[in-house]
Length: 626
Image 1 (cartoon, rainbow, N blue to C red):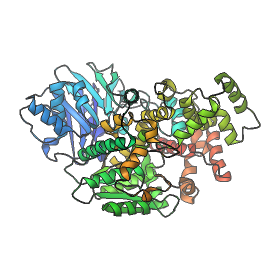
Image 2 (tube, one colour):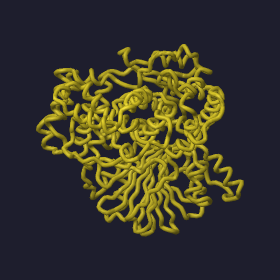
Image 3 (cartoon, rainbow, N blue to C red):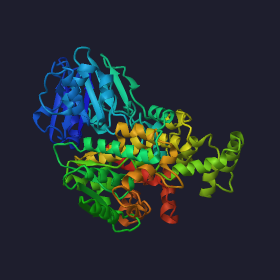
Image 4 (cartoon, rainbow, N blue to C red):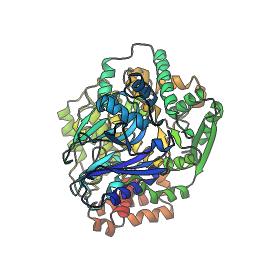
């Protein structure tokens, strides 16, 4: 796990600028740093290293291939690098290796097989920059699901890239304006989805994509090499033919194989344990394959409505792990909040970012790598929203869309229901064209009504530009929507940035390529029935943890943010950021709307998630731009 950065044709001091970029992402790789420039300094690479595999200088980056043709900076892990290394040796593409790092294997594979074939071979999480000194081509690559971040774009006409958007913003000559066209999307979701960033001319490389750039490095070409959409379509066209029991057996085999690969490291490895189905399954399969007690970590709160630590402790005891827990307080949360804008580099407002950071911080005191259970909900139909969308659409679809559209418009604008939030929400959803549009509207309606940003223009993005009707099953289409946007741009961003802020590498076995592709072959009834989701995943877990220990409501990885914001210190912090004069001076948000939303919460108790979204935007803006 590391951080990468670079630029092409930057007109000023190349060494000073790449070192500034490296320093900004120091926490991503505190163990070592390196820089490289080609002969005419038209291409410059930077790297910060968190040493995980081959801790010697043989694993240092930027790294050259044995022939000297290719230069690479790489963030992430190639879990099956030993298999690829053996293939290279067996086929005599390589006679020997200098060290034992996956970076060296990557470089030799690129030289032997080319980019496309190498990516097809690789299983892992990664953001890679590769320069071909012979053809002068620069290639950027991002992993299939989007575990590792990679920003790119132009600053004063120079092409730039980095793992951390903050590394781009420190470049000499950086004056890129805020892209206000992303704000409407941000206030719907609480994050900025790829390919956009908060800045104009700076983008996120989409998951599963390659960017190619030839001299003079002014016209990048982006293309996908793998998409979760194609995996889902292929899986539905080639469904698993066995029984549900056989499906759970195959899932267990695939997860065990993925976990075994992801437990490989030259530093201590542990796992997050939240007491949910996903993390408990990962820990159970880790412990089943480990000769030592696996290190597990969880956080709790004194408030029983939010506390799962007691259950996590029971599961850890049953599995025989070496368990550590930390109970957090409102003061712990308050101490994290000022750090958030620096951690994420752009507005990001999933409030579980706070406990994620705190559990990562605690975990890093004991291990350098932690496995996570993320991905189970989106792949195995775990969220309650999936069947609810299916149920609501089942009631709506018998009425013709033109009739519903007119009725929706009339009701939304009817004075009698404008101040009745539940009725207005139902009226808004009535205008949905199809189930996926219904899901989009269920997220968007509140933000659309509030009109928080002054710029009412909105960029097109996957949810409103790509049809999801390729899949027959409604719930599968909603899962695909989440896997394309919510999972890579919220969940994985939260985990990566929070963990890297304390120099902790996180790995996600559920997102192993084989597991993901297998999940899409499963019929929906193997995933969810009678309101219970993740059926095949549960079947795997129940072989290791008694069902009775897991039969309880899921609390989620959340905090009582609505209660904490009313306490004096956090309320004062919030009201300073939402001050009308300050917001008007910025000229980006509607100050009257912002203050009305806040006072409605304080005086009437009407909480809207957009309050946290606004606070995180304001916190970022005041930290970065003022």
